[in-house]
Image (cartoon, rainbow, N blue to C red; front, side):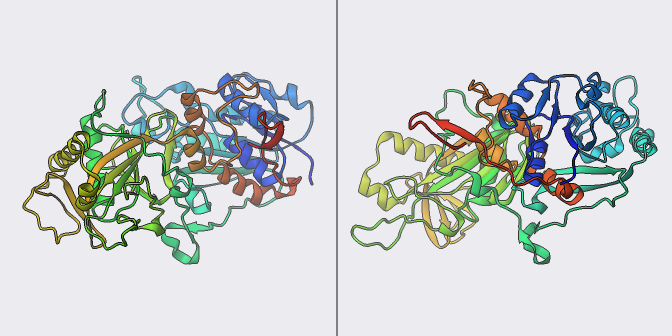
Length: 504
């Protein structure tokens, strides 16, 4: 192992740091962040690291390095004032110049390797006008100055835009990565291990469904004290059209964007980029066969899509179909076959929707109370209003929904007919988002090193602002493998009920 310190300049909740630990089997030596809450989470998971709660521009790292050699410095400056997600809003000059803090510390410490991560729009970094908007004709001007300044220190430079799902993470988060090195070694890039649909002989993208609790359905979208907003209802309806009426499996939608377009994807795809605002929900239709052959004591509504992780939800012959929805911006939901999309830094953006359906035969056998009948009517009215269906459609059209004479929403799936009883919606939990971002299962986000509970909003913020750990791992492995000290040890936590240590 080659000696040398490792520094994480924008440590946050620890995505880059744990990725480095996964690559090298050693914790970073120094972590810097101005946010005490971020330091709390980082310290919980990296207790051997020296933590500095300081302004990255003002901190004197030489004071803590004490003349020792720095082998690797990771830097992920705040990206919000560069990101396209900012839209037409004015940018903050103080945030846009954060990369210059990287130059400052690179100049004084001269690390062998500096790795940076940011949104791809960082390459368009240029001056702002008086109102705080980028000057179009000067796009990329400051970016080029920064790269030139780093090269003046003797660093070789290369950068690429990489998608985390291509390297095994269950998220499609796309980011700009840059490697600077001045030790004479060549810059290396990891080879993709996965691809969308398994193209090129690679493994298919890691689906988000493996990381979701599909037994947790959430609450009905009907009869709520605080009704869902119109656009959310429309997105749910369009998600049902795409993922339920065509194929009964869970799917994901965003629910807080300003338009009513469907923005989502399959659970068998990676989750889209997670941001600080949890705006993704899981939609789960529960279906029961309208007619099916069964033994006297058999379950009439057995799961029709077991290979797609459909789950039985009750003793009323139900099966669950879900998708994840986003609660912000525009676009479509996502199936649980995909990796999760970009996670934001605020709670309430990712959620799940569930649909409960039962066959008419089962309804007759079990009886229909007033509440159940009312919900059946709500569902049918919801579908007619938002999906645009009428009772005149043929039941032979499996991709459409009709309302039966009994006022129940009837759909045909895989040749079997189902009645929809209810539709459920819930937000993704911080734990699900953590796994969707690619953190190890043992990574602790719900409490700090003193045992104090960590608020949900802050958990989501740390996740949404984090580097995808596997990306840090892959980049460090191929550029700094000589620093490897062993294998990462999982976090431990005391189970007081038995007085025993166990993995977190």
